[in-house]
Length: 148
Image: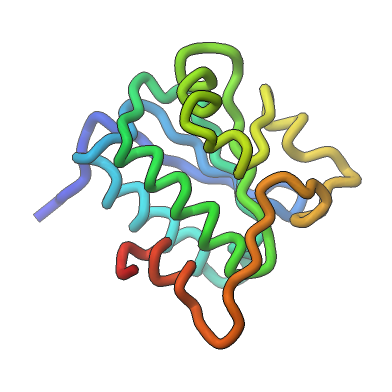
């Protein structure tokens, strides 16, 4: 049985050592599991680096609290691997939601993919949003995978 929700389209590509995931459509209660499963799949492929993740949400048309939670889970997962999630979100309603909810304070947001990937950018080059996992535990990973 295909459980993908047609209201969310996901694709990926490698670029300059980073994994770029493009999301289009809705990030919501009905699509959060699809996003999580997709991110788990693409970040666990041989040769991919789960600490170097950019999610382009410039074509997301709606995002509820569950969708924001899925993005924050991706941020926690990248942090568990010593990296940081970067979002691509130009001006618009979703950027306003990221501001109002405080997610923009935790996750760096860029207007374009090109600006999210300057040649000098390393996974920890920007201090905003860096999360250090607790010693002796992997709680952030469990939360990112929906098990926490």
